[in-house]
Length: 98
Image 1 (tube, rainbow, N blue to C red):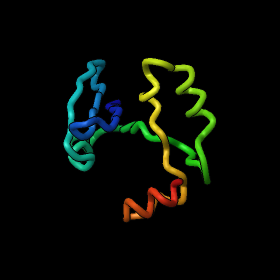
Image 2: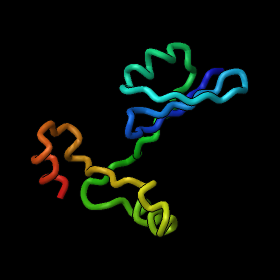
Image 3: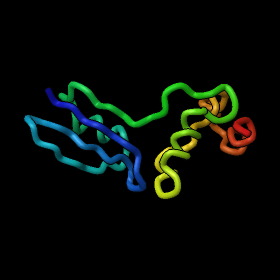
Image 4: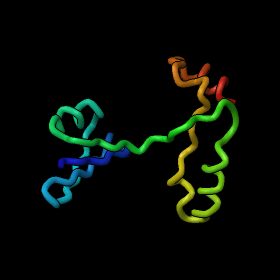
C-alpha cells in the first residue's frame, strides 16, 4: 500500500509518503502537482479542518490553542465559517466571516 500525507506550507504543499516501509518528503508548489506525482497512491490524507461552524469559532480549536499555549498556538489555524466557502471576493468573504 502506498500512502501519503499533505499539509500546506509557505512553499506550497509538504507531502510525506510511505512506500514499502520508507518515508520520504517533498514539497510541491501546487496541489495538482502533488496529485500528478502520486498517481498510484492508495490514500492521500490532507490536513484540513472538518466541520466548519455556521458562525463564530469552533470550541475544539479554542481548547486546542489553550492546551498548546504559549509556544504552539499557531499550529491550530482558524477555520472560516461555512458561509464564506464559495465567496470569490476576499473583502466580501472577510466581511461575511466577521
